Length: 384
Image (cartoon, rainbow, N blue to C red; front, side, top):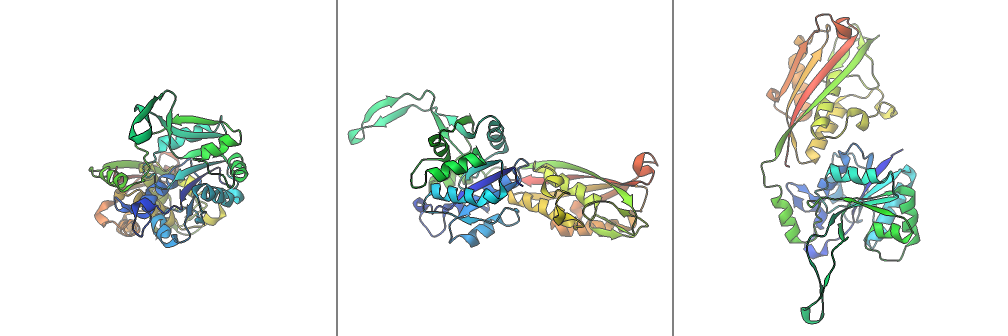
């Protein structure tokens, strides 16, 4: 059962943009606008699942935007944003999440800090939204375009998304206001008498509403990007069996490795290294050993999933260095095959994959021949 689900609302038509493609599917730094939002939640370790509300005509556009991110199947929206949110919430009822984060699909710059502050506030309040204080002087327009007064900006904030809520309360609130037109989901909960907390948002968490907004967003990606490094470490004990998997290669041996999946300790470490580089949690979060789907699963699925998440953020894997620690079996005879296999899985040149082996001079559990350890370091490039 999911604890926290992100509900991304992307059913609008974006008529102010014109053209045949809704704004959430237009290109932003080589990816659809919507993919930026989906990837931010799909890689966030505090979010258990992501569902999108889309227009019924946009399924092919959505499938292209969400490819490889592991999000839930989308659901169709309604005639208004409020209807779309309610329908999205209804679709989540079978999952019974504790909390839901409702996010505009046209806000591609959401960051993990903002998401975390909203989630933290929900421990004390039934609702929470990120917002930024109004800094500009506000004027009220009167007849003929003349100023009719200055509005006191004290205590005024600009609301953003994700707007977070305890699931049962926001679903009930939305059901109670069907047919009304409220400006955001916080207003829906307020109408039901619920309290909504303000947490600090981010000035960069802009919503793309006009073509000028999209051009500004595109300029935000004009910089050189950044390199990140992640580390992974894993251990598996020997068990009865014949042969084991290392780096996606089956290695003959007089024992096997124990694990819920195929126990490929090297690929597990490599997966955690990629996830670490993009701050996406660990392998257990994405592939929990309690889930029967992964019993005996080939570990190359885990590595390629992590690589797809890197790609989903607009990044690429640059280099992967794996060290296998064991007394036996000997890694040397299989090193080239291991490099070739991981290069194939990650679509990299083989000279960007390093596989090394060492022993602990018969010290510790690996020295006693009780199991194998592996550590990995991944370098990835991200556009920002």
